[in-house]
Image (spheres, one colour):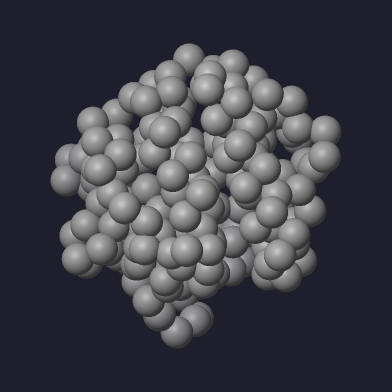
Amino acid sequence: MNKEQVFLNLKNEIFKLWNNNTVLSNFAKLPIDLKYNELEPNPISLIKQLENWQSNSIETKEIHENLKKLSSFIHWKQTYDEKDAGKDFLDKYGYFELFGPTGHFVTNKMALYVIFFDTENFYTWHNHEAEELYFVISGSAKFESKGDQSEILTPLKSRFHKSFQPHSLTTYNNKCLSLVVWRDNLECEIQVVKD
């Protein structure tokens, strides 16, 4: 099976999940005109952690497994500089744009990112103009946002962030693999929020 076929399998599994989950489907509609975009791989050292991790969710296992197969072909990104987030955070974090203006599948209607955190990591307080929904695929993390109760999310659980609402994420003894959906303001910047 070639790389493009595995990306198509991943896309199909996400569409299945979306069609069977009202939280996802009510937050944003998936575009039907997605075009596969051949991006240069941008591997990061963290991918070995993902490749060696077994899924703990039956409902999202196929998505998790497809991501493991694709991990060395993905155009991984890290938004932050070491001065803003710290080396330890960057060593345990990576994300990529699966659907979006510059994603592996191109659309201007929404953005779907996949974000991965290793254990014992803290994603500092930040915000952005885009409304956002986190949806956990595997593992767990503590989600915090100003004005809301903090909670530990596990597979199939989600967290909504309003426009410019400061939020953070912490992993403990579990990794966390999540979908992150932006439904508007796709070109906005992420800003670290200082107390």
